[in-house]
Image 1 (cartoon, rainbow over the protein chains, first blue to last red):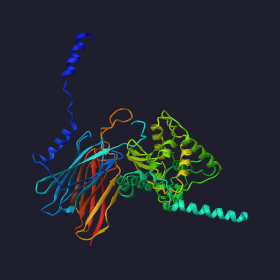
Image 2: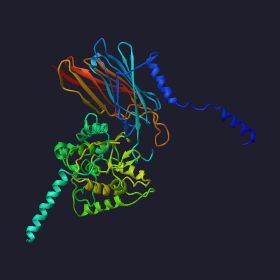
Image 3: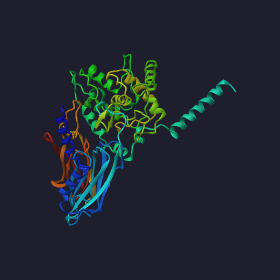
Length: 147
Length: 258
Length: 106
C-alpha cells in the first residue's frame, strides 16, 4: 500500500461516526413510542414478575399482572413487553378484554444478556401504565461445542 | 459375649444408622435443589414442564407399530405404567445373553432391531429421546436402584476410574468439581453434585430434551477435553458409576435444568 | 400432528375466573442464530396465539423471536357459560394448529 492510500484510508476512518452509545435502548424507546404515541405512560398498576437472577437466558419465566377490575367499562385492553438488548426490542403484545376476569399474561422469554425489560399496559380509558425490571442473565458452565 | 450376639448387635447398629441416614440425613443434593424457585416450579408443573411434551410424544410412539414386524412397544409390553415401572431406576443393565451393559437408549434400540426389526435410532434422535423419557417417567419418584453382579461391577469400577481421572487442557477430573467443589459458585451458578436424577432432561441451554450422553459431552467440552465418540463404551461405564453414586435419590424424569 | 399440553379446569362455577395454560412443541428459531456451518438459521416462529370461548375471543398474543422455544402461555378467563375453548397457534412456514377443550359451567 502506498503512502497516499494509507493517508486517505486513515482520514476516512477518523471521519466515520462512532456507533451510538446505546443503540438498542433507542430501539426500545422507539418501539414503545410506536405503541403509546405522544402519551407519557404512568408508573404503577403493572407488576412484572421475573426472577432477578436467571440461570439461563433461553427460557426466562415472566408474568405481567395489571391491577384492574376487568369490567365492561374499566378493563385492560393490551399488555406489551419490550427489552433493550436483544436483537430486536419487542417481546410480546397481548390483547385482553373484560372476558378475562384478571389481567395477567404468563409466558417464557429469551434474554440474550443482562438487561432491563419494560411492560406497558393500555387501559380502556386510553391511558398507558408502565413498569420495568432489571434481570441478570448468567450462563451455565459446560456447553456444546458450537458455543 | 458370643460371636452370634456380637454379629446381631452389629447388624442392629448398621440397620439403625442406615435408617437414620435415609430418613433424617440425606445430604446429597439433586440438581433440582440448586435451581432457582422459578425453574423448580417449571419442573413441578406437568403442563409447564417442556420435557412433558416429549413424554407425551413418547406415549404416542409407544403405541405406534414400527419395523418389519409391524409391532409397537405396547404389543409386547402392554401399558407402560405397569411394565416399565421401576425399570429406569435399574439402568444401565446387561441385556440377556450380552457381555456388556447398555443404557436405556441402547436397550430401546435393541428392542427395535431385535424384536421390531426396525432401524436403530441415532443418538439424540427426538423419537428415541421421547421414548426414553416416556419409559423413565414411569419411574418418577422411585429411588435409583442400580443392579449388581461381577460384570456390572467391573464396568462400574471403570466408570469410577473415568470419574476420578484428570483429563483435558484444564486437567480437571469430574471429582474435582462435583465432589470437592459442589455447592460452590462457578461463574455465578452453583456447581451441582452431578446426580443423573432426571434424564433425559430438558436443558434450557439446548432448548430441547437431551440425554445424559449429551450432557457428559458438554462437560468434556467444558474441561477442554476431547469428547469420546458417540458410541464409546465410556459413557455407559460412567453412567453406571453415577447411578451408583446417586443410589436412593428419587428419579425426576423429565427434569428441567439450566 | 403437533404436540400440545393444555391445563384448563373441566368444570367451573358461573362467573368464576379460571386459569388456562398451554404448552406447545415448537423450535421458535429466532433467525438470529448461526448454525454449525456459520450461516444464519432461518427464522421459524409461532407469530400468533388466540383463544376463544364459544367463538368469542378471550385472549390473543403476538409472539416475537424473544419468546422461548416450546412456548408456554397462561391467561385467565371468566367462566360465563359451558362450552368449548379453542386455542390456535399460527406462524412461519404455514404453521397452523388448533386444540379444543370443553369446560362445563354450572
